[in-house]
Image (cartoon, rainbow, N blue to C red):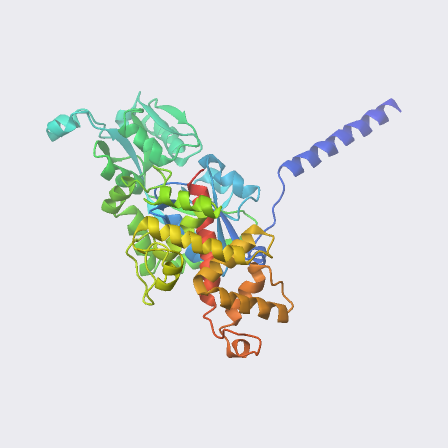
Length: 470
């Protein structure tokens, strides 16, 4: 009896342990079908100078541009989840926080045991990043060479600083075996990007690191004190990854990548981020590069001031202004709208704007008009929905939005909700069968424009919130 009780207790503990283990490492089953049904592709990438960043109000990056095209191919929205710690990229994928990991990680045996890699995004090799002497500009080439490492065998006894969970770390361990000598590996924090680590070498905070050659060459163009000529490995494949049970998503991604990499578009994107050193130097020196500053445009202070009167997040107003003019104060449309907020002459006059091409005057008038439109939709309780109605009215006219609300009522939709309701009806007003209805007072409107206008502003706003902290 005593043994029987202990046996039951043992099996109960065993079952509990198994249950806990399964709960802590759940098997996530979300493949292409679920993504298409949801209409959203969630992807994790890093906030870096090549993957994903903000420059002069525009969302850019190699991974971002590629992912945007893949999401469009699937017919779904793209949701970027930034990995603040690069070490979390693969774990976030495994536990289901995202559908894809897109960062151009090197394919290694260890990583292949955890995730399923895509077709290679590009090929590169690893190089040693080292610093020239402080007064290198006054020295001759042979004098500079005396201070530099020229071959990996010279790394014996040296300290190389890299993040631990990287292919760089694995390469250094293997290299130590290959050359039969000790190499000290300093483990850096996973929150540091490769860009930041290379900059640490340039600033003399650490002596050596390892990087992919395409990124190292870009940084060396901005920091001439760096030398990145010494290879430490053979050509390697860099790829994105999906969970091992997301076979249909991976198959679709691979098929798309194979075709897309043959296009001119792919070559343009790759050269834009990994070959155009002049553009890279200009970007990193800009006051409106999100990796260096917390700014969107040179009008941030004015936008913040006017947004307070409107009581909207200034980053949301900035997203609208980018949609209107891309922050070009002298921008003018073919219909005569002008300035940062593309005000029509009649509207500008009504709002007391004397000079549409004066930033302060334009922003004051544009936000004042947005507030007028916002106040007209006082029936709408949900603030975000109310803002969307105001934005749509700013784009196509208040009266057309009223017509879309009437059409929503006729079709049994919610006339006080923009998303999936009035938004669909504003598009429907492009068709004669709808704009010719007797209760439609203001007729035809090219409804896809306000529909896209609101959608793209909010997509940009999501990026701005991620990049620009309050």
